Length: 105
Picture 1 (cartoon, rainbow, N blue to C red):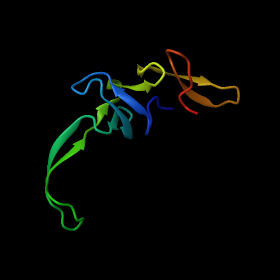
Picture 2: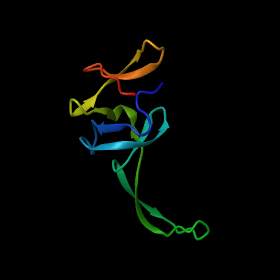
Picture 3: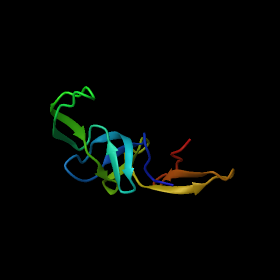
Picture 4: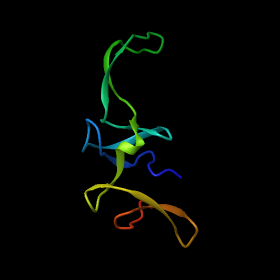
């Protein structure tokens, strides 16, 4: 079970985008995540008439190391570490380390 998943609200803790918040668009591999409006780069793209894509300079998000983001805790208003806990009904859920509150509902 991964600590950070798709559609999680995360905050960047290191790098040039430190302090920015965003939603995880996808988990690229076990070490990288793609966060919306974070780590944006300009890419020169050739036109592709078969796909209907125009050429030019496009801005797109690039993957971040998963160690450079933290799950956003709305109660604390900052990033928080994540742990795991098994509930009475046998489900394994993610919890915030600072206050023990369950992330998954």
